[in-house]
Each structure stands twice: as C-alpha cells, then as structure tokens.
Length: 102
Image (cartoon, rainbow, N blue to C red):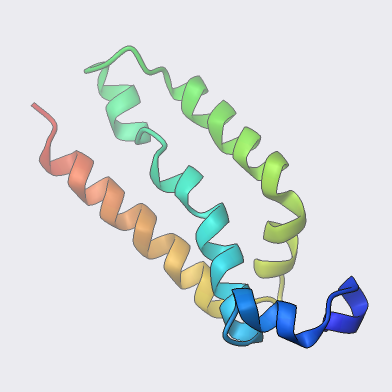
C-alpha cells in the first residue's frame, strides 16, 4: 500500500497502526457530516426554519463531496460495518430528535 502512494512504511506507521486504522479514520472523517444534519421529522414538523428540501440538499452535498469514498464503502464489495455504523448514527440522531420535539 505504501508503495502505491509514494510513502515509506515508517511514514505510514507514524500516522496509522495498520490498514484497518486507515479505513476507520476515513470512515470517521466522512460520517460527521451526516450526523450533524437536521432530521427530516424536525423539518416537516415546522418547529424550526429548516425545510425538508434543505435536508435533501445537504445530503446531496455531503454525498458529492465524499462520493468516491461512499461509492466504495457502500458497494457490494465495500465495508459492511460502514453501513451499520451509518445506520446506527442516523438512528441515534433520529431518536434524539424525536424525544426532543416540543
């Protein structure tokens, strides 16, 4: 892997413990955008200035920015754990927002 990107092994291990650590860090870097999105329920409820279209536009924007990663991680040969992590974060967010609706 290090030969493909032009770094030597010692440089790689200065930043990562192994190849799985690289994957984990990439996944963590692209997930925060999704968990910080407003929920669709909040937008639909009208309890804020957020419109459902804003939520959709934000999702599209996040996907476009990270599309090369999502297309690999969410493919049939991608990381099944990534899909589970994404669902868990989104479900946690939705449950939190549902409980906090006035």
